[in-house]
Image (cartoon, rainbow, N blue to C red; front, side, top):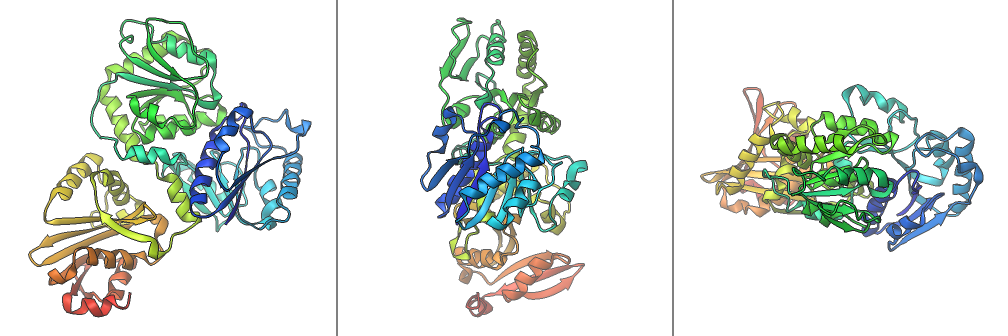
Length: 508
């Protein structure tokens, strides 16, 4: 699979585009793909981020006409066409399976010019008000219901990947995420970083805000190439900018930084943040996150004073209950598996790659998100969203019970479903669900078959299930597996008996 990435990374448009495309490219390369980055702007300090195997980088010709363009705004039609011509010259003789565009200056004008060069086109964008000609559209932000008609700007057959579930953050965050604990904690260490768009004056103001008796007991973990010698009474450690901030963020309790991709990284590790919008595209994103009780937000930063920031931080520390609510909301919203999910959509696994493992405590949030997925709610008998506190209590009880056997289905280590057996004497009641990204692959049969093998079906007389009458997919799965069907009180009852299992199992 040959993949082209078209993006830019400079001080003007930040490093966010590069970080998320690199994360996706690395994951696809691990599945056997080859990646080629085509860029018009790549600042020297960002080059180190692109050292990957099976990855090529090409810089487009320098043209003065592009130097005055604002990378936050859509480029004029003439400029897009010139950029498309330059790009086509580079990939003229190549067979491109996927073209990924992560660039605010380009829209359907540019994409249509490259349609014949690529089998599939994917657009990554934080904007919903622009027309695109693509097969996949990814926006990792929380979107208000009134903005959900944005698909009018996309082709009818375009697959839309919407929300933090698809946030493209480095895989290291998912690894650290496994050890994140859901518990209340006081603030003692504060992580401060403004990423590739760092503004020295803002950083100095933030540090100065801690220069008071109430806040001096806090330890500051600061990432910046400019070490400030001022404010000697403040406890602080400076670190040079590095490839990943995972370890440093994980050491902290509270964070201060810019909007953009770093927001998702902090949320993944359950670190509530005081966020400043550094660029135009971050303003609405930050407002939406604030409204969902996920971050503390400060609009604007140029004329802000240290005293204002100080009051904000003190109010955050004093209201620890709200702080811990945000922490839990962060953990629920971003799980660090966005890159793996997008990779699974673009480069699907085979059924032979599926494995079933025992459920562990860190699967709690996966189960919570699966049960609260819209289609899952429609298929459930309860028909209501489950509250997180109620879910935590239920999950811990189930995982500790000797009468419950719980397993997670993984596709190349990505959790894509769950199956649960509640034991009663010599029978077992079954419950299963699949992540929506893998539905339609006939994996319902697969997860049940793997589950029956895990529990050693020969020890049981029968496996039973209850299915809502309009849950046609589950009805089809149970019928194909040889379960006997009965209809009573507006729902279906299914049973699979030991004597039928071997025969039916041979058909799978």
